[in-house]
Amino acid sequence: MVIFLSLLLCAALIVLLTTALKTRRIARELQDAVRLNRCMLVNEPSSMLKRLGFDGLIKETNGLIDRYRGYADVESGHPKQLEAMLGSIQEAVIIFNDEHVIEFVNDSAQRLFQRARALKGARLETALRSASLLDFLSAYRGDRSLKQQEVSVERQGEVLWFEVSCAEVRGVSAQDAKVDPVGAA
Image (cartoon, rainbow, N blue to C red; front, side):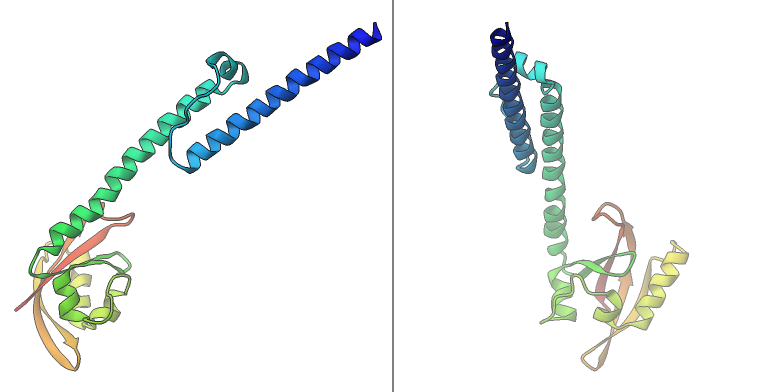
């Protein structure tokens, strides 16, 4: 009787061990699928997955990965479309966020203001050095009806005059941004 119980216990331990190993392997495959943003292909029979409780988790995770891929595809296309559209404009275009950090500069603005230095990521106050531009932006923030004004910008010791306009743009990045097309007056 003791031998029979020992054999039964050994068989139960073997089943438990193989189930634990399969569970661990499935969890590792699921983790790899999430890390690589690819859907998990199921190698196990669905009855085994149902018994272990993984069938619903795998379906939901695959659905989540598909939704993430869709959002990532849409999101990655927007900056490229925006860059192509604004890059073809002849006037200088600068997009910055509420903290006045420049997020986008088209080629015209780059050539006009900083030939050697990159403007993207710089603070607007540092890149353009214009008290009248900052006054215009402050006035625009307080009164949205103010759309256009002439401002002076200091560049390499000389003062240049520009006609600037401002519009609020939503959804360019995680934060709101402002568009500031600058055309020479």
